[in-house]
Image (cartoon, rainbow, N blue to C red; front, side, top):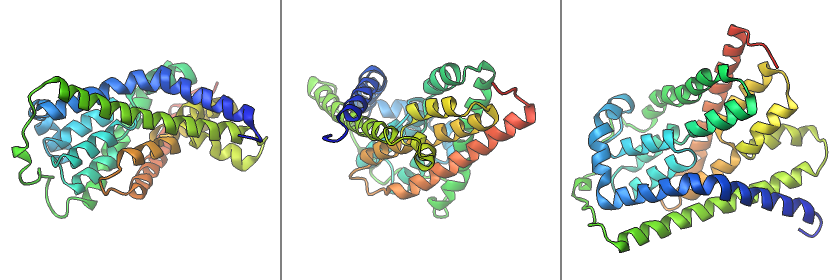
Amino acid sequence: MLFSPREVFSGAEDGLLLWFNTVFPTLFPFMLVSGLMMAGGGLDVISGIFGKALGRIFAVSGSGAFAVLTGFLCGYPMGAKAAADLLLSGRITKNEGQYLLSFCNNTSPAFIINFVVWKTLGRENLLAPSLIILFGVPVFLSFFFRRLYLKGQRSFRAPEGSRDIPGRAFDFSVFDTCMMDSFGAIVKLGGYIIAFSILLSLCRGLGNLPAVDLLLPSLEITNGVVMLRESIRDLRICYPLIMGLTSFGGFCSVAQTDCMLRGTGIHILPYLAQKLTAAAAASFLAYFYITLFQIVPS
């Protein structure tokens, strides 16, 4: 802060605006509703509607189906938060929590469609393949990752006694508790976003260093996607890299995920390895698509 005050201030400002204008209004309502559903018994309704179908596909329990839906629809790090909340409330086992984390903590469809494809790439013809790649890869990898955690079983089962967990009657104390928990989680995410934005701003001030330029986009997904598009004009190279980064989520999302997992006993390193595997697969498929269909670079 003393030697590079301008970079620190600029990074903090960018991170705060990103959190306040985008992350807070997007994720806070989901966090609040998710907490209210688990506290008030709404989770049983979701499990009843989607549990059997998702259980057949992903071998998850009825409660685990909620984490699958949240992770694929709501974006980072909601999949991790849902899995952590379910584990801490005794509705899923630790093995199922680790398995859910391996494939259902992903970038949201809204971010992929609006920011990655339309705003950054500017290629509507890449919308369908991007969605297929970014959601197809974790679904495909889930068939391999589950073997690490099922321990010979065909599917995950709810822990003994989980069906006896009562839902609390709704009152303002329940709402207040869920709201404060959601505020605490969203403020923590804001802190990580600001910290990584400051780091990104400081690294940019180092000048043109090849090693820094190569690793910089991986710090934070929003800025990283833009940096890749601006620095690499060849779509045959740029598109696979952007798909890989979007699948990975950036190290900022890894830090946010680790924050959500506090107290669960789930370690972050297996998750990091699984996300890097998904990123490599997404990059390969994106390059294969661009090459096979000869998409004209722009």
